[in-house]
Amino acid sequence: MDVSNPVRSVVPSLDGPVLVVLAGSTDARSLADIHERVPGASKSGVRLSLLRLVEEGAVLKVPGGYILNREHLAAPAVVLLAGMRSELLRRIEVLVNEWEVEPLLVAAFGSFARRDGGTQSDIDLLLVTKAKNADEQAGALSERVRAWTGNTCHVMALTPADLSRMRNNKERILREWDRDLEPIRGNANVLKSRP
Image (tube, rainbow, N blue to C red; front, side, top):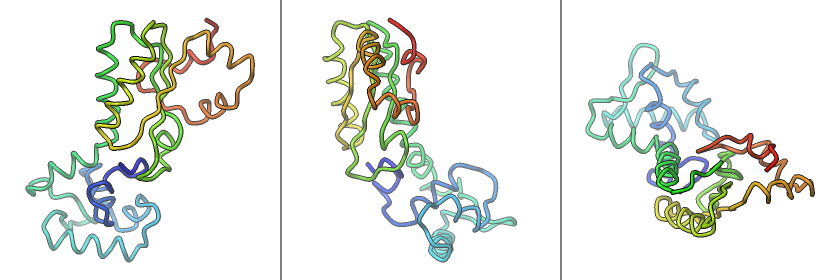
């Protein structure tokens, strides 16, 4: 899965990101607005994509711009594809909610959290827990994320005591987490509190 733009895993052309923008709103979006929301695309490329999608009936040209044709047979699939990232986060949360010992924190970091990776990027997760079977949980979580996305997943399992040692040693990764940690379950304040 392309961690910066998951829809490109299924729709590698510019049509995918354009459809994602339109799926995110029921309001008409102008060409300029759509272009601004599709990083790296040329305005003429976005225009050509919109013309193609209008011709296919998946997009409607309306006063004020363009909208996703939500009556089109493909519209539910487009909405589902547009929500791939949210669905992954939801699945992770559902999985960790099944654990006997509730984790203090499950969060994404690295390129997935920053949304700047690609198809070859791994997915980095932080698990802070007091569970005795933390390594087993981390392994199971890693396997599920791999099955759901196709990406390698690294889960860093830490106890509150581990975090305390890391703070005392002023480990560099703590600055990265301050900058781009994306909590999925729990509260990131656990990183700053003492065990």
